[in-house]
Image: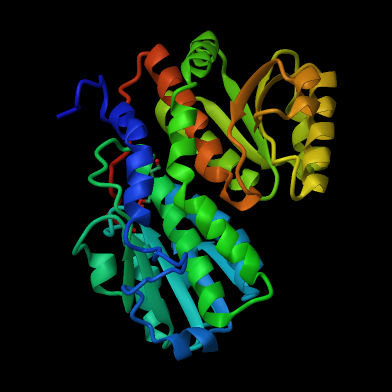
Length: 369
Ligand code: M6R
């Protein structure tokens, strides 16, 4: 049942190109427009929405953080992302013009379920992004966009995360399409790039041996830090979460811009720091800022592990280890940038003798609050 792999997690990492392609299947028509029939919320109601609130936990929350960048950019609708476990306790402002998006692989996470019940009580519409047919969260939502990752068995979420991202991009682009924004041309260009993205995920998977080797060489370290900016920031958080849950190591993700506000004090000789670098094309300011962050930490002794777009020469002099990923539009980069971090965490856990599919103290689905 593990299909020849030692762990479900390895199998599920390898299944990602297919999971991504399956989640896109049938949702983009021949003319390059999105047809999300499942989003049963009528188009006039979608045009009326004046706020989007995403609720989720753990890895699904990181998908939500990335979705916020995409939604606000493509739709110009304000979007908040909140940990489901915090949401209802702060008396959030919700009304019928708020669209709440609940993201959950299992569809049974109690915190997320309670958050969506609270939202519906306030009259908001709830759209679920879920991987498990007929589970509680989609059943209690107004509409559901299923991710087609197939069953995810390993406790650490991998292919579900990538498909959650795809679903979030689809929702963002669809809202942009329905509402019409000044980004119309960009939206169609991105839909084209998205429909091809599973090949890039495949390409990343084909080049992971050096990442595994690097992971093994770090097995006796106590701490690994992760830095990113823009959508690279949630990717950094996700890389750190994977390492915590699988390798039981101290791992933290930071927004690179926050370094000088505190975290840079943690940098010491030979501390591994993974940095997710945005594309030098597009938002080049972001790129240049992070390159100087890499210089800053390296000057203080950090061992830099740099994830950057192939052909990006500017990072080469400052990267102790360089992990190249294919070029993508900035907002889609998490689909390729997260994969090496999954492989890295899985290999480190194995090297440390940990149980990869069933990390200690964790359950696949958390059905208590
Ligand atoms: O089933 P859900 O997506 O609602 O689960 C949410 C989190 O419990 C889950 O993503 C958790 O953080 C994973 N173990 C992360 O790998």
